[in-house]
Amino acid sequence: MKQGLTWSAAAIVVACATGCAGDVVVRMQPPTAQQTGTTGSSLATVTVLDTRQPGVAASKRESLGTPMGNVTFDPPEAQLVRQDLEAELSRLMAAKGITRKETFSALLTEFGVNTHSTALYWDCVARISLVLKSGTKEFPLTGSGTERTYSWPGEEVLRKAVVKAFEELNAGLGPVVEGL
Image (cartoon, rainbow, N blue to C red):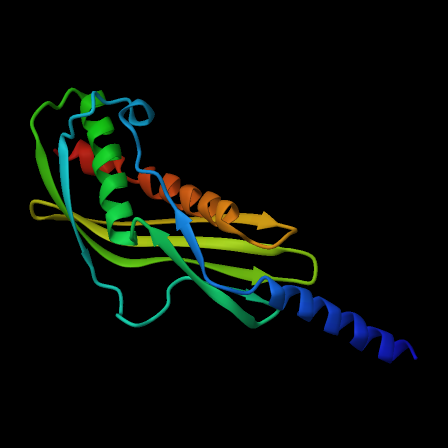
């Protein structure tokens, strides 16, 4: 009887989780001049080359090992990276008193968010990896962020994990600006 009850409970959990299955679009707002502390004109121009392997889903949700849908971003990942880098580099440059415009390129090697679940919670883990180039100098940068939720990992929870990943990535931009 006890084993039958355990299987019944597991079936109910799977049925409930399956009802939540489906793709999700994470809508991200670009940084504003007020958020970045700049006047609105960008001192940094960044070109992003997305070098991730095509056709491989970098972002997905799962529940206890069962795929529950893919995660996509609006705007797309490369555009998010460009907007973030331009805003943060411009903010750092302005703070250092740099007034000339600079051009950078970034090779995006990883951008994704996945969920890891237990019977009690989901950990949403976002990862961003890139190589930022300024002239002949290369700066490998990474950021990761985790957000835990005890309910279905929807758009808001996934967004928070990505924001944390960008914050960690941006914390590594100081040496880039120091080299200008």
